Length: 183
Image 1 (tube, one colour):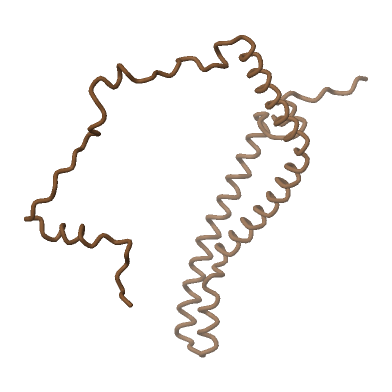
Image 2 (cartoon, rainbow, N blue to C red):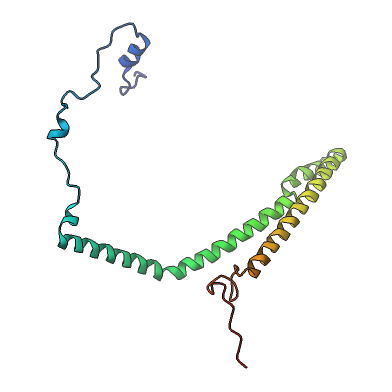
């Protein structure tokens, strides 16, 4: 049994190793192709067949319209499903974001290292890790508080400008005020 693969052209690799041996010349252009090729070639029409005939054009436009109405109706019928999925995925995403932000703010990724220091009863290492956690949590807490305040102010500004959602916001009402009751 041999270890050589029959799919590999070993002679070509051997020729690359010895460039001093003359290799046969290979033509770059197709010899069957002449300079008169563009003159003798069959040309495709500029307009497709369906655009040259009034009946074919009408048939094509009718098909496109039927396809468009079918696709629109299909997705319109499924829009309650899409809305439900969007609401569910939005809640999942919000939960992941809040949970991830909480882990980041409270430095929960360093908890296993601190627990190992406690189990080994290494007070010096635990004090270093605890001080590091305290400084991280303090800084991250201020960053999270600032981001929360900034987002709250941005939301309030959007509502005042009529860009928020709801009856007075820019949702379905387009920023128009709700009518006051008569009398």
